[in-house]
Length: 414
Image (cartoon, rainbow, N blue to C red; front, side, top):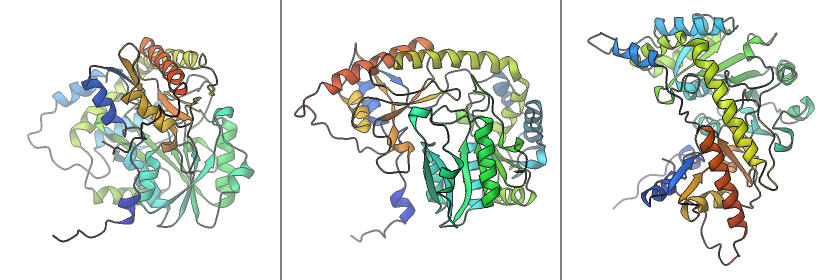
């Protein structure tokens, strides 16, 4: 029997998702009757607005035909209305609809960087940035931020140390996944000034725009002087609890870039018709939907943070946005601890799944004592989950070296 040819380099180095790689261990625990609290993934439990399903149910076309590669007019019109309402001067001509924020990120990266080029990113960062960069043969250059400062940005001088002739763009996420950090106006102005000085694009992942509990920030498209080099990456997944709808968009005032995004869109034909029809109706949900949702997440954030601060030696500042806390936990090996929690630890027949920190870094060795915790459960369950983590830390650190025979998980992503 012959041996298959070797796979591509990108196939060999594509990492497993730190958010999903522990799923088989969680599934095994559930089969044993254990209740698993999922703090590992940003899947909201808030109901999707009824307007979405109502619009899909009302769709009467006999054929689900190809749509325009740019997006359906009714969805583009709704996006324009949404942005205008939020104070952004964006019109439908600036928008290309994408299959979630993921495709928007991939389009933007590949539009501004050639194979071998570099994009600066502040770590820890959303883990799938790694995957998009690998698929485009683009090098992510990490700039470290620290838990002790709430993962806010370093100085312009520190950022500039990482810029080389191959640097083409700076990628930011605001509010941030995985840290929950909301960039200040001064920080955004620093990014703008560095980008202008070094002739770089700025890619801004703003999918958590509504999820701000304290502080003031701006969109990248509101930064004066960046009009021709700002790219807004957006998604409806978290905003409307529509993760499975896979609806997003990429936005720019740069006409040449907008044309490139359209051509990329033409290569994959179009995004899903029914999801666009349903999503177009969501603009009508407005503040009546957002206000109680944000109030609910603020309560969850406060509950999660309060319980974390009760654990000795935990390091984290209260995040101002998104629905994540990136915390330093008093364990030596977070990957091993996360797997052990699912495989061996039970507290009153319950345990917790977390997202280990190293997967949110590009720098080897970083994040080994950190975890991203998604407070997407109700307030009571968030408190309970952190209390179980506290019990787990105590039990894990009490193990003798001979007890620590469990191996770090090597399961693949699902």
